Amino acid sequence: MERQVVAVVQPPCGGGRRVWVDGHDAGRARRPADVAELLRRAGIDPALMTDATLVEWRGGGPQSWR
Image (cartoon, rainbow, N blue to C red; front, side, top):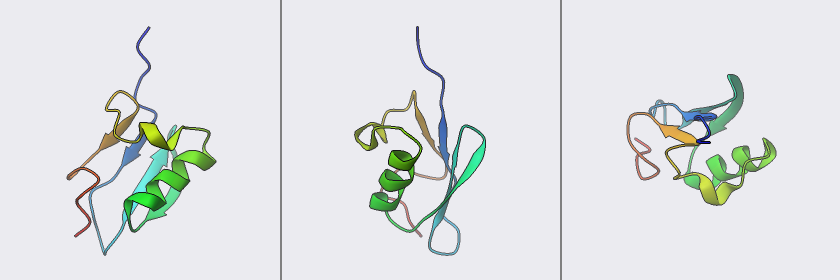
């Protein structure tokens, strides 16, 4: 069974990106390491942050921070 997207990383805005996990605001990330930490706190393996079945990156992937 395929798992649905559980985290959404919003487009860059003001130097950072808002991260939502299971519909809840997990915080603001200013770099990929911040996204990894927010995912870890939510119980998601940070190594999976580029897995499109779990994490949806809007407005660009982990390289987009402008």
